[in-house]
View (cartoon, rainbow, N blue to C red):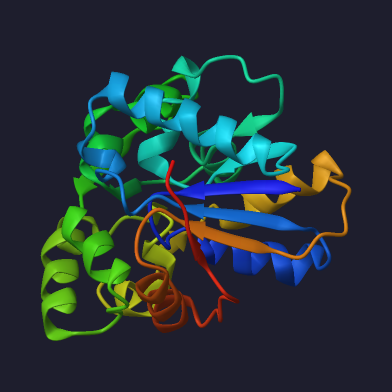
Length: 246
């Protein structure tokens, strides 16, 4: 079973693609909204939290872990050895950008993702420069199911404005594809938005995960809010999410 981890519902977009492309693959989705947002934890706190979550998921049948969160992915190198395959968003996204070879690359992401320079350092090693913008308010709004309010549009316009003439803009948060159409109206016609979610699905496909269990949705937060936001943001109906304490 695949364990898919995110602080909130951003990873639901990745889950949706997995189900569309890999069908019967059983997924254990874990949302950690009952904990401090990953982007606000210290690096040590985040690493400890992820180690605890991964142990929990392994105990509940996960044989492979996909961290569908950019903020959490910045701490992957610090995780303990859990003895099972673990990947995050950043590595596959960098590989995708390297293949695209953008003329001018922009990036929008949460504060931790941008300030960590995780993307900038890896892309520099491949001779690709990146212009970064912190887009923290967007993920918080999308987490509530908001994909088109005036507040969201105003924040998006302010954030993406300086990047509007980039040839490509990397969406360095799994929440952002939920407002892809909104963002596309705010950039030039030649600008392409890069959503690395498909790269994550390719990684999962290579794992060849076996199993016939039903999908399971767990959250440390409010199951009803999780269900409502997943439907509003990604059009995904979550079946019986269960609240857990981790």
